[in-house]
Amino acid sequence: MNFDGIDHLELYVGDLDAAAELFCAGFGFRVTCRSVPESGQPHGRESLLLEQGRILLVLTRPGSDTDEVADFLAVHGDGIKDVAFRTPDAVAAFEEAVRRGASVVHEPRVYEGPHGRLVRATVASPVGDLVHSFIQRETPVADFWPGRFPLREVPTASTPLVAVDHLALCLLPGSLQETVDAYARLLGFHESHEENVETRYGGMTSKVVQDASGRVCFAMMAPMPGKRPGQIDHFLANHRGAGVQHLAFLSEDILAAVDLLRARRVPLLDSPRGYHDALPARVGTLAEDLSALRAGHVLVDREGETGYLLQVFTRSVHDRGTLFFELIQRKQAHGFGTANIRALYQSVEQEMMRQERPAAECG
Image 1: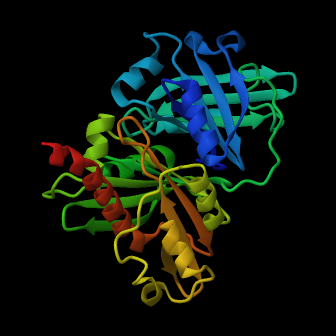
Image 2: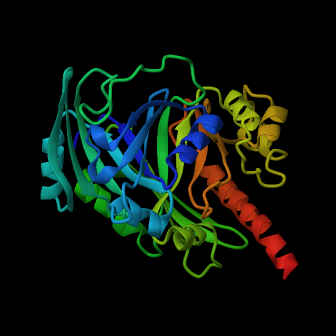
């Protein structure tokens, strides 16, 4: 299986303009294209293409109450439906995945325009209602989807977010290893990291899978047996099944990005109490000022003698409190913040307790 990274992500949303406002006003994306039913959208759907750096997001609303998009929203609410992979041969990737046992969602189809063509085929993911499309592009970059989206002006301005770094998936209890095995069998992914986290209240088991190029990466998490229900159980209950819990954007200057998100009123998760007091002893000297990291609630993890990464997480603004976002900056680091997974888990627990406290006090 030969992938060149993530081509785009498609989110199903109930309110197209409100969803676009979140990404544009909050994260600095630009709407560069609108696809309407008259341009070939199936079932009367309407979509927006959002761009920033190398990130392409497609937001799609249903065209009718009987559309499968409406069915997805009724079960899960707004969320990521398709993680599409770019490949030099979509038909070969599709046929190989099906030969290995993947379920067919859409057979290969060619979309042609005045400047070239695009080939797309789709299979089911091993995770809930998620799917994976294989995208073969033989068009200029401005022709995102020939015949479906009109040609657009490609943004060239500098941006705080440059690419999709990884996605985090919440899985049903007991399904972690079988899901890792399914991605290996169906798509040729390999396991690269493993981490088990246990806190005072909850716990989780976690594994990371990547494609051969390392450009496609999923961090998978499942609840730890015998623990009190925590953030993963919260996601599974409100999302009504397994799915994408958070999307991580790669940044080249996370402190500047954090300042921008704050100015745009994007709510960030607080770091655990005492986290930054212990940071110098754990990670040593950093190029960033400790007070700036503390003020921005930025987490740090050291890799080897020279490498480290910085991470910050948003609170969920989803109606169901499910999907949220991460910003990550890598400085010669290739991991996923192993030492911060516990800190993230604690941060989300703190947020859950903060949200539950007013209701309890009112009772």
